[in-house]
Image 1 (cartoon, rainbow, N blue to C red):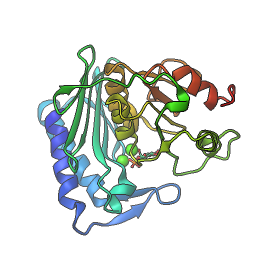
Image 2 (cartoon, helix red, strand yellow; image 1 turned 135 degrees about the horizontal axis):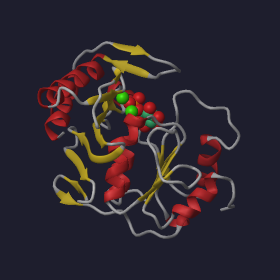
Image 3 (cartoon, rainbow, N blue to C red; image 1 turned 90 degrees about the vertical axis):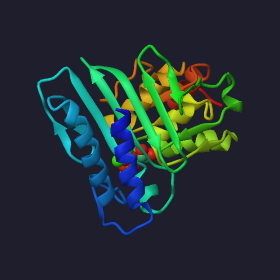
Amino acid sequence: MIKAAEAGAAVMKSYFEGNFTISNKEGINNLVTEADHASEKAIFDVIRADYPDHYLLSEEAGEIVMDSEYKWIIDPIDGTVNFANGIPLCCVSIGLEKDGKMILGAVYNPFINEFFFAQHGFGATLNSKIIHVSEEADLMSACLVTGFPYTYLETPNGPLEIFAKLIRKGIPVRRLGSAAMDLCWVAAGRFDGFYEHKLSAWDSAAGFLIVEEAGGKITDYKGDYYSPYQPHILATNGKIHDDLLAVINNKKQL
Ligand code: IPD
Ligand code: CA
Ligand code: CA
């Protein structure tokens, strides 16, 4: 996994300052670049060299279904809009499931040289040093991060309403543009919580395990144990979890 993340990140970096083709996917400004495909290929090549019969799920290639207990869940560039604009907040994200349970996760941003890694039951690391979530217990003093879907969902109590509620009360809510990094930065204690309304499995597979192994809590918006195969995510240090969940569900006034 480490070799695969390094290979993808090296390709991403090699494209960063040069010219690359950019095209649009579903929604507005939901971009895919030549570098996304090239990074994905480099990651696949490393994995397939050792594990040719493993199942692959990757953002650009889709599902490569294999009869295997192992499934690699790959985002070849998380933060593509940042990447396409020359903003070095983007990374490679790779999770590995065994029998439907996440057992390994790696998130690598080569621009700021941050490699996050977790193995189930063994803790989470940033550049090989153990990391922990923050200790902040008061939502009013928390520093949060979120993201917005490419296709804005016109649902009541949607992402912009929740964002407004928090911001109006003076709670800082950042928006980095990479869900994998958002999760890792919760794991490292930089943010106290992260929520987003519409993620895909490749955005969160690795980061979800990294937060959990760093002592954090991750649920869906019902408060149930998180699955990367549904859209909602709330990942926190655990201490502000219930309060933030109540705000998201409109059950608590700030
Ligand atoms: C996106 C980023 C972004 C999040 C979007 C994701 P992409 O992934 O993680 O932060 O808000 O929901 O789709 O398209 O850059 O791989
Ligand atoms: Ca992504
Ligand atoms: Ca991506």
